[in-house]
Each structure stands twice: as C-alpha cells, then as structure tokens.
Image (cartoon, rainbow, N blue to C red):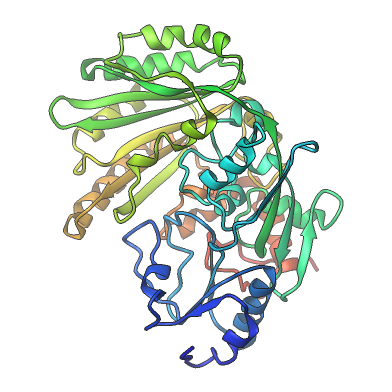
Length: 452
C-alpha cells in the first residue's frame, strides 16, 4: 500500500486488505448509507477476523490516529467514517454459527439483519433485530435494538448473552454474565464506546410464519386513524408489535399507515387485528401470513442507498390529540415526499425490563418518535434540514428527554446523556475502566470517568 504518516507497516500487520486513497476500492469503501457523509480516512482496514481488528486498534493507538469502526450496515450518523484517521471496516466478517439445540447464534459483526435472519430462520429460529434488513447487527444491537419481536422477546440487547471484544489496549476479551460482567452490561445499549465487538452471541426463539404487513387509511381520516391507533395499542398482547408512519401523498395530503408484526398463532392474530383492519375502512390492507424474513425486508424499498438523510428523534410517551395535530400540520408542509414521521412501538417484554438491567434505560410502553428526512438533490438540503429542525422544536412539549441512541445524528452530541439517561454515570465509569484515553470516541461518545 501507499502509506502516509503513521500508516507504515499496517498492511504487514493484517491479513485483510488495507485501502488508501487511490486504491480502486477506496471510494466505495468510504461511502455509507447516508449520502450527506463525505469523509476520507487515511486508511481503511477491511478486517478478515479478530486478529486484524487487534492489529488495527494497536496501530491507531500507537500512532495517535483517530479510529472509527464500521459494522455491516447504515451508519446514518456517519460515525463509521473518519477524516484522516483509521477506519476499521468489519463488513467482510460475516461468519454465523447456529446451535439449534441450545437456541444460540454466534454472529460476526459484519452481518446485516437480512443475512443474520436468513441463517437463523433456516432452523426456524430468530431473535429481535431491527426492521430494515440492510441494517448491520452490530450497531443495532449495541444501541439497544427495537424490532418486530420486541413485544414478545425483548430488545436485541436483551437477547445478547455474550460477546468477544477487542479493547482499547488491543486485547481480545470475552464479555458475558460470568466474565467481565461490567463490560457485558455496558455493551447492551451503550454503543461502541467500550471496544470493537468482533462476535455476538444471541439467544434465539422459535419463530415461524408471522402476520405482517400494514394498512393505510384515507387522507381525510388521518387524525382519526392516529387516535384509533393510540387506543388500539394501549393493551396489546406481547405477540404484537406495531409501527405507525405519517407520510405525504402530494395529491391528497398527509396519510397514515400502520405496520404490524404478530409472532403468535396466526388465527389469534387475525382475530386481534380485525378492528385495525376494519377501521375507516383502510384504502389498503396488505396484512397477511408471511415468512419472518419477508416481514423483516418489507420496508427495504423505502431506504435506497445514495439518498441524503437528516433525522431527529426522541421518545414519545403518549400520542395526544395535540401531538397528532402538530404532526399532521408538519407533514402537510414536508418539502420531500420521500420523508416521513415514524412511531415505532416499544412494548411488552421489552417494556417490562428494569431500566438498570441493561445500559438501555428507556423502558415502559412508548414510541420511538423519528422525523426521518430523506431527499435526492444536495441543493435541497437546506430546506429539508430546516423543516426537520422546526418540526422537532414544535414537538418538544410532547416528547420525553430520552432518545434512542441509534437515531442520534452527528450534530446531537449534546443529547448523548439523554440517550443513556440514569445509566450514564455507570457507563462513564465503565468507560474509564476499559477505555480511559477515549480511543473509541468517534461514536455517540461517553466520556471516561475514573473510578478511583
């Protein structure tokens, strides 16, 4: 390779490829899902395994290089890519071993949700991940992991039972309930602050055919549909997880769709969902028995690569009439019809976990409220960003202080403490024990605090 200052010997220390500016694969490797991110690492280490991760971490620490870590998926905030530093790229690490008798999967960090789901569903098993199949399992699980199975089986981090981690001093350690328990606790919702996870061990559950899909209501009934949705989900059984979205049909105005994932007996699900499917009635009903992998990929078409993204998010405890009015007024003025406002339900088993049981503290029945702006033309960035900020400001009276770390943007550094809530102090002490010099700082960063 052609190396600049601090890069000499990096290619000899790794078995994976080292990409530098000018390499034929460099430009593609530095790109992430969000086209607003345009950074140029001094080198990208496309790791082949844990040994490469150790070598890259050692090299960055020894040479004083900024270090960013990329898993297998989106990186909407762009923290996976650094300017002028070393980017650890895990996307080629896609090993997956499923033990059906123990109902456990060991998964390397480069896997996407779709790849992980395909491997576990071959045995009729699954665990909670996210809702878009191109997402990477690593960032998703480390940030908490809200998905279609959260009502029955908890979050992704609730199903994490162990991990292999390369620490700031270059060691490869195991974290689990019986070994390095403080680190294990922090990994379940604390993000990439504590090391590079090279392999995850997840608890699996039997999941076969599910009821999935969604309904869309007439534009003139958008407000009534959101009120009905609020009441319908107030006492949902654990088998049901839902998400509502408000989007713009330029011809008729704001529209409301409700997507569902039912992971119990199909007949019981059809009975429970009958009121939702008859309200209005909907102008579109696409709910039906599908494979779990089909449910997981159903939203993929709405997130093509190459678009520019700017998100604002928080948790919403109650869908009040006043909040509904603000949301519908905002969507009517939305500058890009590709954008939308989503409400992903956190419910059931995930809601009942004590806030201090994992690093993810946001328990109870509520919604991840996400203003998801996306557009194609960079010339439109100003008005889309301005719209997003204005809507978020108008929603402040209705939002909780907490936020889902996986939805934080790159400018949300002042909200990191809100992502971890009452667990931030403990996380800062664990950070101080495992990464006192804050080598892993290109993330939603927790500042290290000494415990002495």
